[in-house]
Amino acid sequence: MRKNRSVIGLLVLAAFVSCSAFSCSQQKTAQQVLNKVAVTNQAFERGVRAAHHDLDASGNPFVDDNLERSLLDISRKVAVAGNEASTAFLAGDNATTLERINLSIALIDDANTNRLLGINDPKKREELSALLLAVRGLFTTAKGFIPGGGL
Image (cartoon, rainbow, N blue to C red; front, side):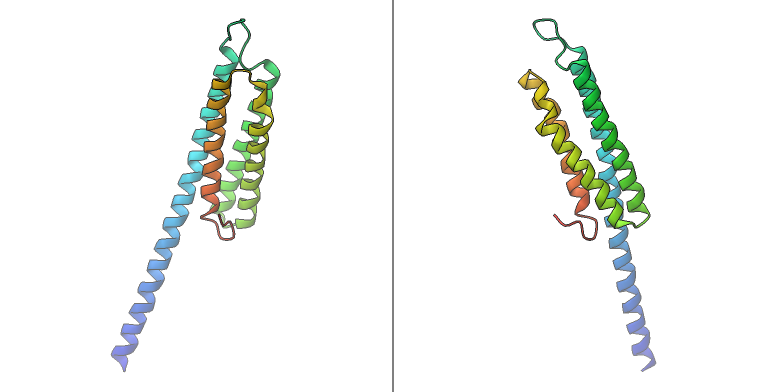
């Protein structure tokens, strides 16, 4: 009888350790995804700045001053919300994590649907849109690791 309790105890302990390891693995993966958001968002910022400095055939920038400010402002807001999501995630605050991710996705959707239309060159617009969609995809992936985030 005593031997059975020991075996059961070891099985329970093994199950707990494996569940904890899975949870840690999921948490690590989600944090890695959120870190990739920051890197990809920085690439978007660099793309906006480059498009602002690059000139079209008529000598005008592909992205004018106002559009550059607008897109960089969105990028900053996405960066702040991403940092807040990451902090909330590490603190175990799933509701705030999802709220900040959803805000970021809404900002990205607005930029992709409305703001990028101000870029007359289709190639530049597609390049910046691809970067925004990459950031959006990373946020969507991160949601899958958060309880209640679903996909």
